[in-house]
Length: 456
Image 1 (spheres, rainbow, N blue to C red):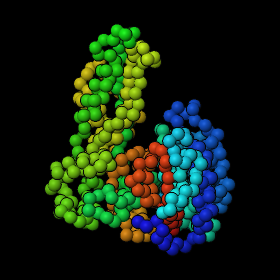
Image 2: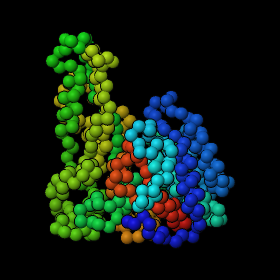
Image 3: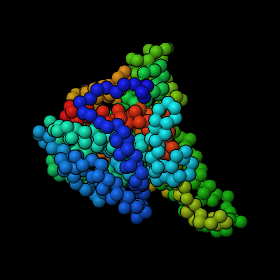
Image 4: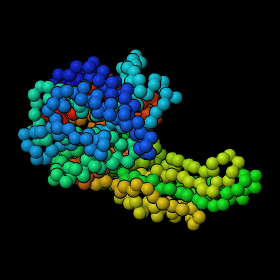
């Protein structure tokens, strides 16, 4: 989609340059969350919260604000009625980053013109301050115009989504205790993308109607240490390496869910070439489609199976010492239709070694599936189509984990969509170096939220 295409007309004026400037200012505050919260610089989080008050004075005059779990933010914009409220979500913590390897420093928020379009570079542009700022820009412009929503609007901004998500969990606890059941929840997730589905040239907006479960599986080997000059044939690290290899080589089988089939059918109707017939009759061709999805890309492979990724390793404390304990952390994303227990059983059967201890931390089951019919879904779809004309909207199962998984306790209509265009290269910068967002798509994200709010 042309980033310079004329943006659809909306009823609320917005100073684009000022919106970009405010975004840059908030990106420059390094709100890096860490699993060990004693290592977190909470002063930066306090600065961010204070900056929101400075940048969005009209919103902070009209909306009620609560601090939850220390640094998470819950706003309530009173509507004509408190019934059937909407929750717009984002998080303002970011994964750690240093200047090493970045073309532009991660917390400089530089505005760069590469000759095609202007982009803002920085940690958090896509994940997830971009959505947070877009929400606040939409709210501020509408509050300043005197708009009042028909139903209450809540803004839920988590402070530790990148680690434990306990801030969002505490917000849900609070809303649940008050008997609040949202009619619509929108959080980060899918985006407007191209080139992800064979034969489809039009932009595709993938909207998460569910998300995979997530857990950490720990593989631990304990045995006697000693000097590295006289090693046994099977050291703790060798045994651990064998276990890792077995897990990695024994992939989980591909299985299609109803959401997978709906996505394939939706996109297949817009595809061309010999695969169109197969896509339109996906249930009858599930076996060859499973093989196809496994080969197309890492993304499509992950759509149809539980995945494992070894992310952390530890061994001896010295280069010349045998480790008394070797440990690996396996990040597991559990597919719809499976469970934490079934996943653990598969991994145990793959390892086949009683000397490798297998345990889990922070288990989360796959979330419930939100419907793709009805007023909530229609509003999301219509808002996307109005903001990005010519885009195909499809449901999908989100591969990552988000704070919205907690909201499935209190709402049946939880959708995961970041209203931005993201190229393959840009998606590759999530949790990596050189994260950036186009200015044009950031501004259209604001329009998306304006449309959602106006309809609520």
